[in-house]
Image (cartoon, rainbow, N blue to C red; front, side, top):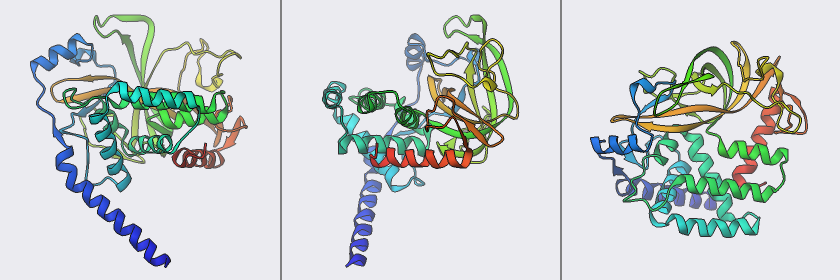
Length: 345
């Protein structure tokens, strides 16, 4: 009997996968070439990219179709894009807000919330850059809502479920909201004066830093763009990644989250160093476009230093301990990720 059940499940899964592949032709919507009108509209709204704006942005060829389905995607990623794309095509923003507002008042999870969080995590984990491009490439004449609305509302629901700022809450929010969580070793750091978008004026005393780091362990975010702007291939695991941060100052008071002193200079600014090992929590922001490419800042959300293979989590955001061997910390990470995916929070 068990063998028949397993076979039956595999047949149903295969049929579902076949249906998704058959529907890809209907789901995909070719993105028209970007025109001078697109350029004018983007410039007026502050997201057209000019060459003299360069501040270490990640440069990726624009999507040719949405949703960005690929033959190498696993079943759950394909299924997730299928459902998400159908949802934001058929439900308006107001309709989605009405639903999530009701959930917020209930302050509890349900199967829909659990699955929504699970699939948004899986879509991001498969390829954060594809997911962010998708969210910023939706044609408003076709789509009634957007991914950002769903994701931000679910983040509020996570807050309401936990209600208090516990280590569990902080860790789950990092897992859910981040694009990447990686163990890295810093290769080198470049910097330039930070510039405003419209005037390109520099801001006194504020620099933007670009960190080139070797990825030692991929915890979340399997696919990322290489550091070179001239290379548009995706890299997977054991490669270099580049990310940015801006001059602080960063709070180090007892009333706020403390920053480990190994991460700061004597003015209280974040100041990463060559050869440092770190756990970095980073995310894409500040979307720009030109005729052929998309551009993002990949910026620091949180940093945890690793010194002699010991992870320093001085705010106890992942566990009740301020220091843990990396292998022990990773076990806690994997346990919390599993709970996030199956609703065990």
